[in-house]
Picture 1: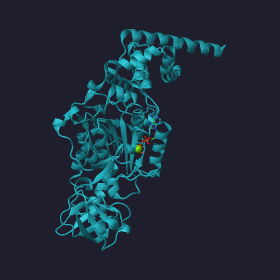
Picture 2 (picture 1 turned 90 degrees about the vertical axis):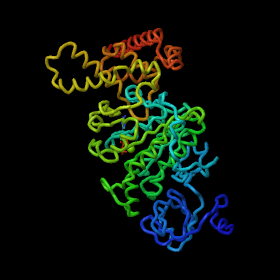
Picture 3 (picture 1 turned 120 degrees about the horizontal axis):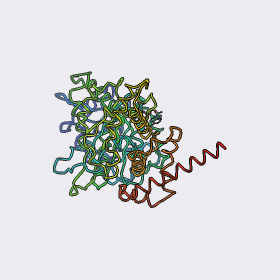
Picture 4 (picture 1 turned 180 degrees about the horizontal axis):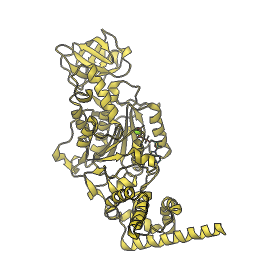
Length: 499
Ligand code: ATP
Ligand code: MG
């Protein structure tokens, strides 16, 4: 045994059995001679690459190959050396790009590892969990105000191609800068170039230091793409067990389902609806159940999941989509028509929901967000019915104007998350009915600059809002005073420009 361990350079691991490759086909090796291995276990081929045990028949074991299958030939030895597949973990992974087996892909040398974590761990039981009570601010105003996400929640991001799904997740990661939250971004089955753009955006905004990127782009083996979200969850569990709050993005699970379907068909499993294997629901529920908030006895950390799923032509009744909707605690529905209309982020409030609800919001954000959802839906409805705007009553016009302001406030560009303090200030003014008078050409200028102006005008106000996470009556008055000054300055400037 020692000889073999030296030959294969696996000195720390306990080799249990040696089998032989019987045949290799489309990324799947049939192995004989492994008597005691289990489903979901890792094996190693003599060429050095790994395989994951995915199926059995009377005599043989079927394993999917990580990496290039051309490296594995018939007759090669296969080592079975560990009970369950695991991934190296540690603080050293922060800021790194890794494969689904934990190997660094960013060319920045080896990662300092502090242990290993099981890739397919069972979800924590009910006694280890605590209710989700604290908000995980995403920096996307419409989400934080109307569909708040809690720490430990699973919120699905669902929408057509190219409608801003990834952008919302990246905003949420950028927004965790300097908050102590660890982010894990898991890229499954997408193009390498798009991932590189995301990494660049995170880098430019200083958001890579608190993030780990688990990358399984479209070119890598099916086994790696299949494993990626589980590895990301295992890495998240390491940080969670140390009391940290973790945010994991799975971008996206449609591709994960495709890759699993492909593997199942190659393993000659019976296929069911839309040719997916029967256990596809189990596959995703087993993954998403791992999110949650732990009691203080179990580390007190939390893991929030933002799984992404793609729809075709806005159809949310597909097999994978309905499965995921039923497993998660709510969904953020992104609408292609809204996106093309220019309402970005194109979140459709009518079809979006957070089943955890406003109980996770702090007092200030809850107060300023009350009624927004209903008001916005009514505005959209009214807009549809009054397209021509003839013979509208004063009251209807006022309500339309208020809706327009709300719509402007909800818009924001990507990679520019907005803090909860800023959201409170803007929507406080909205709730006090002070924004209807602002002309449309001044609106954007106001939204983009007012919070900065307020901080410069009276720093104590913004600090107080940040510390208390609320706007007390006297703070509210100070905000309104600054608002008046801001517009006095704007008006003076535009008069000077005109003169
Ligand atoms: P895919 O289906 O390719 O995964 P996606 O739904 O993840 O796409 P994104 O890649 O996030 O969408 O965004 C698509 C395009 O829309 C990008 O060019 C992005 O810059 C732009 N975009 C997304 N959100 C916004 C926004 N809030 N404001 C302006 N542009 C945006
Ligand atoms: Mg995307």
